[in-house]
Image (cartoon, rainbow over all chains, first blue to last red; front, side, top):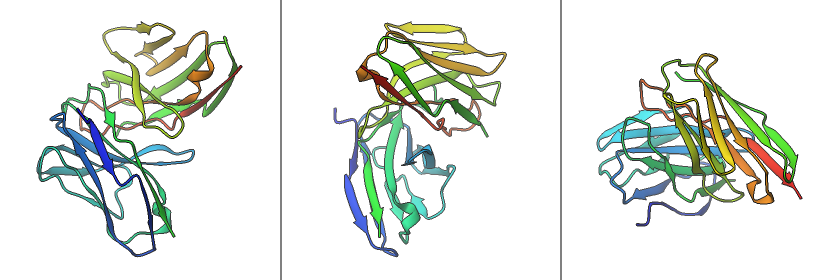
Length: 114
Length: 112
């Protein structure tokens, strides 16, 4: 199994550009989520999904959109990139919506907005 | 929503010493408490977890203790080794709702 796969690994954007970070899992997990990691701030939840067709906001959703059309994929869209969105982004998935199961993370995407 | 506080933010120990990291949570109904380890440049990975029906769980040199009355749980690493150097995160998923919120992390450095 590949687990959770994120693409790209690195990306540089200009202010105002848009892009989509891809996340796919092959473990048939219901729960998927996106985090950003900034120095000294830990992992902050951006958006999450408890199943196909269902998404909800996390702690820091502004400037990001998500959709969940299939169980496997959970892309994160930056609508108009800003320097404040420079960060490392992690996608994660877990088996059930009961939350009492291990979260598996992708390898991360390092995004720089100039 | 659930609030998770983690201390300390940094911790330096000599190889062979013990390290303790503590997290407090706000929702008394929370019942699952995982710990994740993130090595430099890598993704977070689960190292140990505990459920509310037990007070302590051990796995070789690591252990987690839970105090439900005080609403805190701790990660204990004994006989630390340089490869234990990493950032450690706790989490306390709320029993109502589905947000998996993490603590702010503890950077552990083990000096030889």
